[in-house]
Length: 136
Image 1 (cartoon, rainbow, N blue to C red):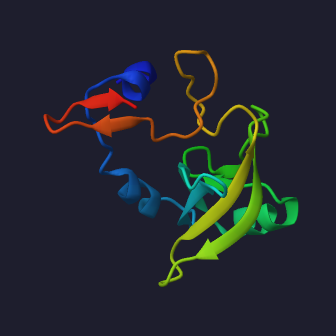
Image 2 (image 1 turned 135 degrees about the vertical axis):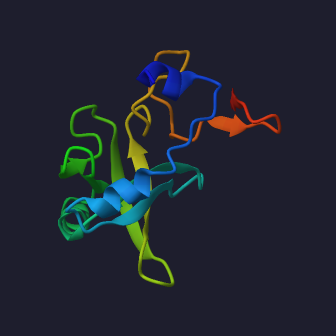
Image 3 (image 1 turned 180 degrees about the horizontal axis):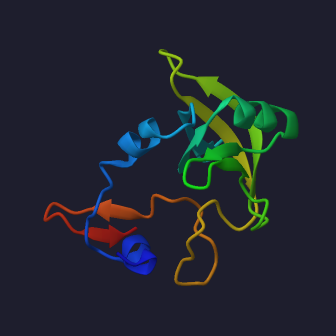
């Protein structure tokens, strides 16, 4: 499926194999959610390993481990849309983290809205009762 259709379309095609792909790889990672510290909006979900977490703390920027490229990913390094790290929270089972961030750019998502600007977050479609997606 083309990226455009996946990222902008109204057909639901969830990747239920994503975690299996990650588990079969070499990276030891946990999920990391980035949330706007001011508005509470969930911006993105990524994965972190120890290096990504330590880099995030040191640089004060949301940092992830790219499971597809197998490399460190400082959010905003190429786009300029950095997420300033305010706080890191750890869940009850210590198997995921929450980055409380302050966006320092146009948006957190790599996709663009109708206005041509980066979307504030990656959760810009709602699942309708009929199983299709609609922009919100």
